[in-house]
Length: 55
Image (cartoon, rainbow, N blue to C red):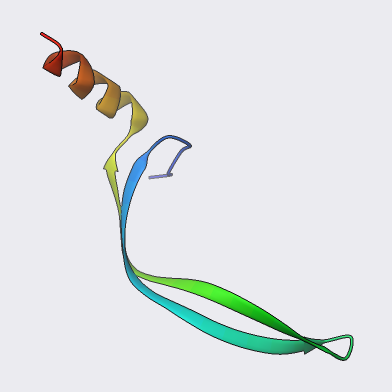
């Protein structure tokens, strides 16, 4: 159930900000916290679907 380059995905969740100290400097991060992560159409399946729509 891996996601590959070119796969369409649906992600639902939130974005969070945090910070931490590194070498005496504050580092700020932005994190994506995914509550739902679903592969919509794998690349090969999406290609097959687009072939059908051309007929």
